[in-house]
Length: 338
Length: 173
Image (cartoon, rainbow over all chains, first blue to last red; front, side, top):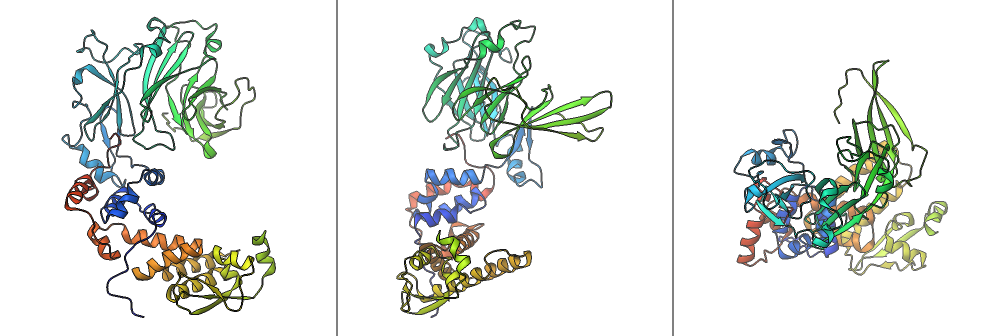
């Protein structure tokens, strides 16, 4: 039985084709495969399949955007792609493609997208920066590589009325990655309004196209007795950390963590496994746990060490014992900036 | 559970199977148990001297599948590192087949529920697709380009990046 000259046609079931395609190593391979015939293309462009593929093959890191575009360097696999963006023609990180670019301020960058907030009407657009206490209702999300932008619907007045501008100590808009079962184009935006007696997050989900508010009930108890407002800097939240779908802030004045779980959009309070310091990082631990690294210094013995601990996602607010923690001694002269 | 009795029984009974084109094959029960379909038939006492008929599996791929299962069943548990390496080499050689056989194995392993072989065939197919242009993929797998010229122009534009290795697709639109 000789095999025929013409190979048999690949009329596999969609399920088998998916099993094959999901094993392709890069999205470029997947894109080229989708161009072979209509049945390949239909399977590959299916939303459920693409979600599965992207979970296994997260988009590569091209660069770190700090003050400038810090492109991936060889031998990083994205170096070639990243080099293409070093060309100023290739991407527009100033987002000058958005109408009236001088009326927008860059607030956050995440997963290849910028979040911009509008300069309030009537203020001077030539002034650089933004007021970190100003409630901004108009936001836009930009893709600097493709020079595309989306204007988000304004935060509705009835939601905005939950907080009063005069009470706001900090208003932070930031991008939130899509939920696990969502397309990666389905980003979310959170506006975090911290007031003396209230903590409110306004959440925009691209898949619903709507804003909804989440209020943290325990805030008043946590801030009771603190001297408010600035300049005492109490109660001031730390910078924002993100791990395993949770945003975390350190509340130094009570030595606790505030956690916003982006699956449920519920706030909780978490007890850290180690003393908190200003030099710390919240990282993704095993089994979906949040990990905490804290850099400690023992001045007398001239040693530095890391506290390395895991925290449950939502400890009850009244928990008293510290979860497991370990100390890792660092060699002298180690400089660790977190 | 049936699975628990497999090892304890350690029967040397041979299971007969019949291909769609009427050829008979034999393999140890432990080998047949690697196929979900055959295992269920054996559990239901459908394995007799006449052999289990496999209506959609032709003799050529079935011979390969019997080989695969026999090899893997003989070395199922408690593998030493050397044995595991040897099994890996066996797999690599085993799947070095032309696309006709690969296609038959993909379909047959899926139909018979031979998980290890399914994975092997699927991975081999993916390895053949990767790094190729659409035209090379059509040639390899005997695929007919059934896009209209308009569709083709559109998807070429859309997927230009996949040839230039410049940028991934937009995550905004």
